[in-house]
Length: 283
Image 1: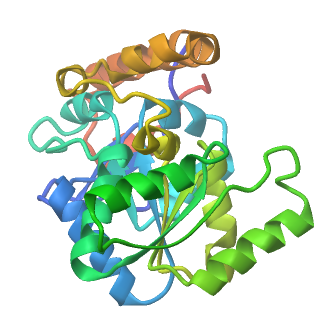
Image 2 (image 1 turned 120 degrees about the horizontal axis):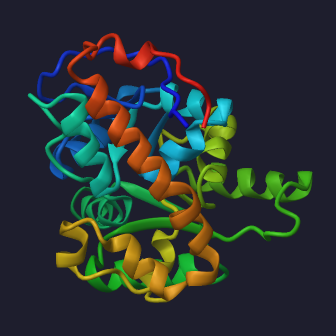
């Protein structure tokens, strides 16, 4: 079955710092230091901004989730969280692929360093019970001058209750962070940010998935050499096979192979500008 491509609102040329369309989803061609600088710029630019950290699972979910596609289309910064996204970019724009993986779990520590050095304020929202507090303790152990102005773990079972949502908004608004890091898991966290960022008035909001658990030590991070060769997913799978088997082996891997094949076959027939608007059958 074919993979569906989606229209992108940004058909940037392959200049450095532009956007690369992968399956019709625009990713920003930035390094980690450039991404951090962009986020600094968003904080002072005014308004409220969302940052997405995309991987293959996001690309798979985008196939059938219109709101999730809207989130990516309207995001101020879309970062390539996984190595397969970089590999796909070589098929999308072979002459100018994405230069670097910008993983959300690494960006977390860069933002902690930024807070330590420049006083940027952070709020940790979500994660497993206690994980945001443990992540805060680890950040302060490494960066003692970091400004973490709040943590909050809303209850999972009653998350959608009006009183729970009101309490989230109250805590975040009172803390008034520069950056809100949200660990609800994808696509829940990205949709929640999209629907609430104007009310929260936070300059920059970023979905970080299970980063609090990794930062706090509850979940082990893969060794760097495994991450460099694109096998971080395997390390995560071995830690939680029952939960991740269906995601990785039934959804993400078949999807990745289909998308790579379609992009490779189409690269000699379609320009980059044409590729995002092709309409292929839904997976």
